Image 1 (cartoon, rainbow, N blue to C red):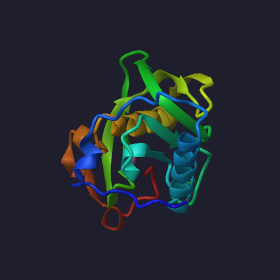
Image 2: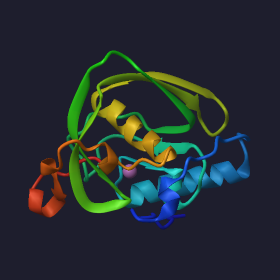
Image 3: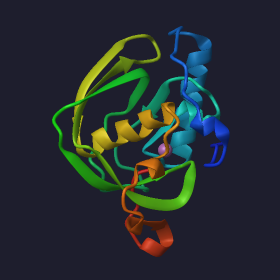
Length: 174
Ligand code: NI
């Protein structure tokens, strides 16, 4: 089911979300299915549970290029619960981001270039991966939602921030 996406200003986007305790449950399956439906409906690169008002540490992302960001590296379609991120190296990279909770805007955000992430899928199966570039950026953006951070809070230079239609950029990450 496509769910309503909370927009910036809603206090539920600022919460620290709780870890998933029970895997392979009907309620977790339903949450994940709704998140995937909602992400696909909006051609998003990813979605975090808090964006539909659920304070659980669950994110979905990836699945390849969509009309919104056709040139993005292919990110594997992933359901990730209770994610942990370990940064690799000290290199950061600037890149354009948007967010379905902040519609119509884009900004340049510095992110770690390379990282290792781990967690569980909805069945409780362990996931461990190394990611870089756009893949690593999506992971950081979505996992930030679980700690109440929106991408705007990471922007250093607000001269590279504005309305998508005014910036005249190609479609980018949401
Ligand atoms: Ni977002």
